[in-house]
Length: 189
Image 1: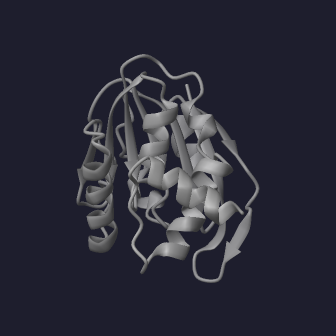
Image 2: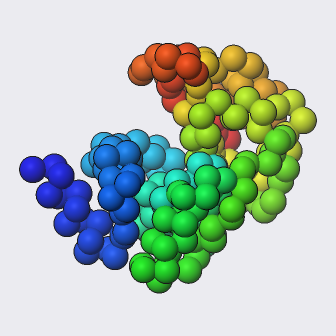
């Protein structure tokens, strides 16, 4: 049932899924569009927000931000370093004509450097978040961050608090055999 719903939802929007990555992308679809794991991030958006999507994969999170941003998100910078996922991301943007999602074939900058004011960040980069959000990161202009931590939150809460954010860390929802505890961290001003 949910599989038919997912395929129908994606096809109506022109979204492309390769057969090679079907199960992985299907799971991402369920997490993003059915469970709405990024709902918190799009609540209370400021007008003319720039969204940064670190770990965009085939674009499910970028498209969620676009559709749920209700006209408040002016552009989405979608970072994806994997060649195959980047190709799917680019193809999905082409098929949907959503040109304010800007695909960037690169990994997240280490450490993060300010790009624009009035920014939100979604981050799911399999442990690299600890290299992106360091004490040297420049988070000026960023007002919301939702990231999936890997290997525990480590010093991320202290880093964000030192930069003027309030922080909420959820208990791990799984333990990856390689990356360790995985859970959500929310930072906001």
